[in-house]
Image (cartoon, rainbow, N blue to C red; front, side):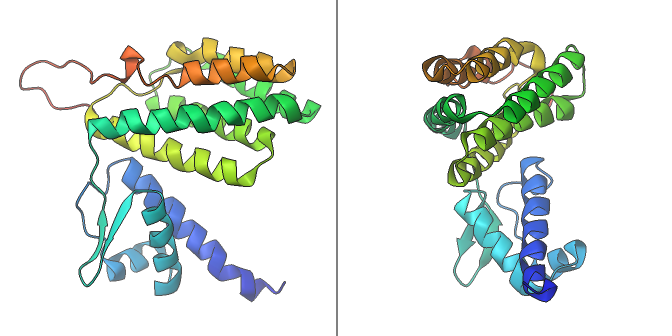
Length: 225
């Protein structure tokens, strides 16, 4: 396929990823209007790639498209977090089950390498690094499952849950809290045990986990990012 034919897709992907990151990091807060001209200039894309990206973000639940008014960053509530984790449990439980049935030696090596990286960051204070390892963990398990539609849903729900956690003052995932679950999922995938892989993943994403409650804070102190 000629390079010119693929360029719009690359630009759309670039705009999508950049905007999604800004929304998840709360650089674009709920209710904010996406100014097309300003955003096109900032991202270096045209109107068509930007609108394609916005449509994808709307599908992800991150943007509201309001006819004749524009595109706004979608609001969220703490109750949304429970609903998202309920869905993640089902989707990613299946992801882990399929991964245990389909994993190759290369897949297992990739997951084991991620565990090594995770252990090296135990006790670290860089929350963005913890989040990136968690994102890679879920994405690699989904990639091992060998279903691209499933992987797209995993990526979408991960971004949505992190954004809600940031907005709601809920403690974000740390390796120290989750390493045992990571190890359980990876061991079950490596050993070809689908039931156990699903059980470990569902435990990792349990919406009743006290970790998903808003963090307590002193009177007058700001909410956590």
